[in-house]
Length: 319
Image (tube, rainbow, N blue to C red; front, top):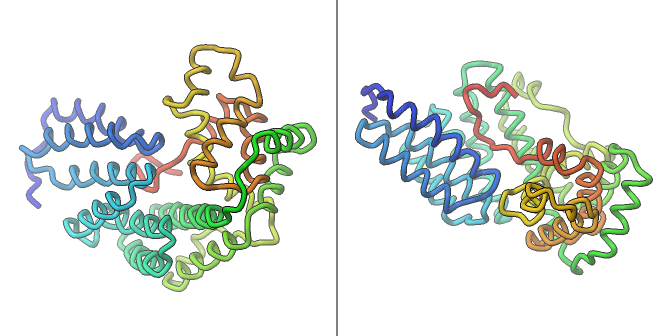
């Protein structure tokens, strides 16, 4: 790719506005907005042949599509990035990793394992040990979270009953500490989620060089219900956060307008139940635990703590 033309002042100023706006679309899963912003970035950068930066913007677009449930669109996009980028670049690695997540979401475990193996092999191209450790930890955590979500979605039996979830959530708030709520959620995670989590982690470690295995956090075990609950809660934030905190949600609109309805605990539980139902998650104690955490923290703290994060790492991001 020919990218030897320096960015102009106008380009830099526009990108400082457009790129953060595009990254924020991943949290909200706002695909239409992401498409418009990506088109603006492409129009801005195409005349000066900054193709790599355009591909980076498109990765944000495809990750937004992934979060919006548009998996075919996302897969085709990531496959395009993989074809157009050097195998030694972070851009290529991120596209492979996100494509693995697309296959996990589809419950296509064979292809997911294959893409995980490719991703692990490509992480070795990251020369900085700290950055390599950062990416390993972020990727394995995301894969474990996605495994939990797949397992939860496969356990569809009865619909969630708002009154029952509300009662259980209020009892959890009154009777349990934060860590005890996480343990309750861990106990409610179905066996399929646990098995899939362990399957994907094994596929990951199988391809990992010995020295790099030390970079991973300890495995989540079935016996440690609190740790399992925390990982499940981290996975479910992609559902619960949008129900409570996304600017398009009824709760967020009421909250931002200072309406007293947001202090009605059942209103918060109802939003989370609706979001879980839409995501085909019907495990009652998982929904009740998620609602209890939202009530216990309060909307402002919950929205800050549980905002969904992207797999892609910004240059300034050290976490």
